[in-house]
Structure formats: structure tokens, C-alpha cells
Image (cartoon, rainbow, N blue to C red; front, top):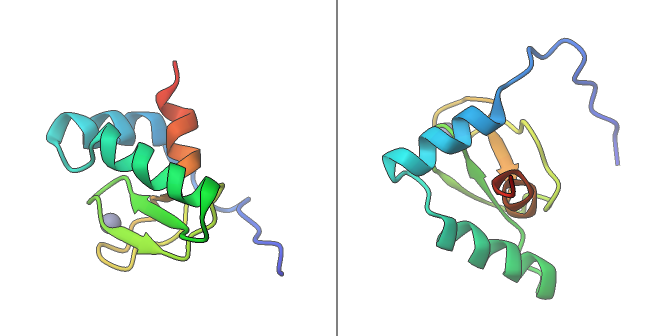
Length: 88
Ligand SMILES: [Zn+2]
């Protein structure tokens, strides 16, 4: 376990990115809710890139700002973290 320092990372507007991803259909609420449920009740940890929607395996449920393997954006969030953001 290592502590990732995120001080130098420019704040990423995850809420705006999530809204845009949902608007564009890159991600759907159903997909995210299903993934969060699997994380909660199983050992499948899934995260999604809020920029391109790429699915990442092995992402902790509370992950934030992980680097996307597909587009390189620091926009990968754990499914549960995304669900929390969907709640107004
Ligand atoms: Zn991406």
C-alpha cells in the first residue's frame, strides 16, 4: 500500500465529466450501478473512465483520478465512487 500524493494534480471536475459521459451515452447509470453492486457483494472491482467510458478491472471502489489505460486521462473512478456522485 502506498499513499498517492495528489497535491500537484489539478482538480478534475468529476461531476461535470460524469454528467457529460451520461449525456453522451458513454456511460449509463445501469452499467455503473451494476458494477457497484458487484463490487459490494463480490470481488469484482470495476472502475470507469469518465472521459471515454473505458472499463477498468481491479479498481478499488473508492478510487479517484486513476489514469485511464485507454485515453490517458486521470479520470478513472471506482464504480461506488461514481454512484456516490450520481446522488444529488
Ligand atoms: Zn479514458
